[in-house]
Structure formats: C-alpha cells, structure tokens
Length: 226
Image 1: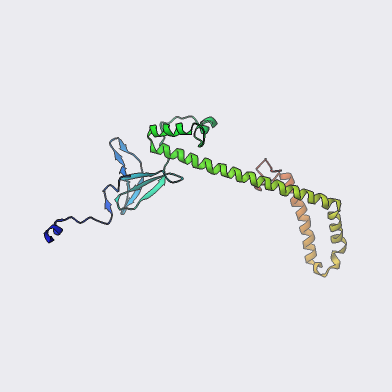
Image 2 (image 1 turned 45 degrees about the vertical axis):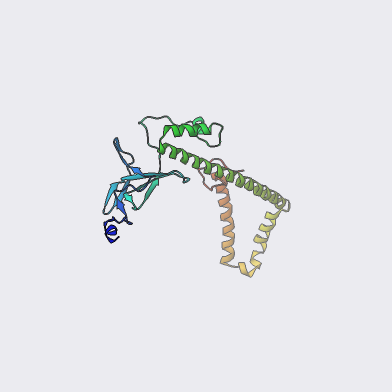
C-alpha cells in the first residue's frame, strides 16, 4: 500500500498556468489567429490571455480570460466584433427588430443561434438591457412630469389667490414704510435685505429672458416643461 501511495501523482491545488481551466473555457489561439485580443497580467509582464470564456448570464455579458486552471479570472464587456469597414446605421425599423417582447422575437433569437457568434449574441443582450433601462427611465420621467405639472398647477392657483389678496403690494408696503420701526432690521441688516429683494427681482427677470429650462436648469435647452 505504501508503494502504491508513493507511485501516485498528487493533484496540484494551486494555480496551473497553461492548463485548460474547465469545460466552459476554450483556447484563445485558434488556427486562424487570436480569437480575442485580451491583455492580462502574467507575473511581471502582460500577455494575450491564453484561455477565454463567456458570461452570457449577466445583464451585461462579459468576456472572461485567465492564464490557466486556478488562475485569476479577468473580465471585460463582451462587444460585437466589427465586420468590414463600411456599414449603414441601424434604422428605427431595424432597432424594432432587436426589441424584446415582439411577435418575431423567437425568430430573431433562432437566427442569432444559427449565426453562432457569441460576441453578436452578447451585443444584442447589451441592446436589450439598455432598451429596458431606457424604457424604465421614460416611465419614471412620465411620472415625474405629471407630478411637476400637478405642483405647478397648485402653485399657479395659490399665486392667483395671492394676487386677489394683493399680497405683493401689501408686503412691499410694510417693508418700505415700517421696516425701520423694527430694531432687528435697522442699519446694515435692513439695507442688505432690501438689496437682496432687488437682486431677486433682477435674477427673476434674467431667468425669464434667458429661457432657462425648469426641468434641468440649463439655458441651452429650448424645450421647457409647462
């Protein structure tokens, strides 16, 4: 028994550079050239990853790479490989073809499998993920816009009631006539307060003339929320 034990080759448990990591991994160096130009560290130098794999289960697919079994796994986004130098932009109709949940989605998925290009499948998944997030953001913006309109309407109604109560004239009259009666606003404090009121009026006038967007606060935006 001791002789048999001595004759057995122990299985290494540490990193094994150059050894295929597992069934989901494949050699990055094909007969036609390098499959993916993925640079990873190898000790003190950088090398093209000898082994690669794909993670298509993530929301945003990843390209995985390492130096061998038990070695550190590196990742980067999995983007579609370009084909040729000339291409036409994808039209809105073509984008609809790539949208999930359509009657023809199963047919498109079948075509992708028949194409047998993992980078293309990964890029379509990227498009699906971005489209889903964009749709969610649009829904959120719609809810926020409706809330904004509700608050603007309430503010408008309040301003109408304030107008019928002659609020601005009454407040300004008290400031101009009776401010000096209040010890708290005598001297510099009162002067600063009056200056601030004038500055606010100038700021409001400038804002109205610069057509500042009520949504994002930028003056370069032409469309304003009502």
